[in-house]
Length: 119
Image (cartoon, rainbow, N blue to C red):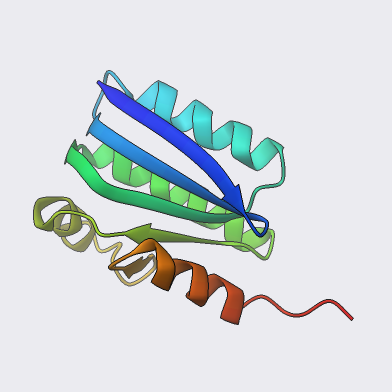
């Protein structure tokens, strides 16, 4: 089972995930990110600290979200994945294309530093 919780802070959406990202939860997972994209939420922080398992399908969804966000001048930062989750990204060669950090505060700083100021 996968639990999702989202909140917004300074036009940045923080998604906290808990549980398993597997064949049973991938549809819910993909739909949730689809709804965020439909609402033009392209600056995403995803807290993975409480995700215990992720299949390669789940990793693929992160790549799709990354690509859509990047096309819309956004970004996705993955926060504190457990070593076995991080290893999935590395084995699939995705760790170089995705951004990782240890906590949400760092992720917020990274996004704010890379967001151009409005004139």
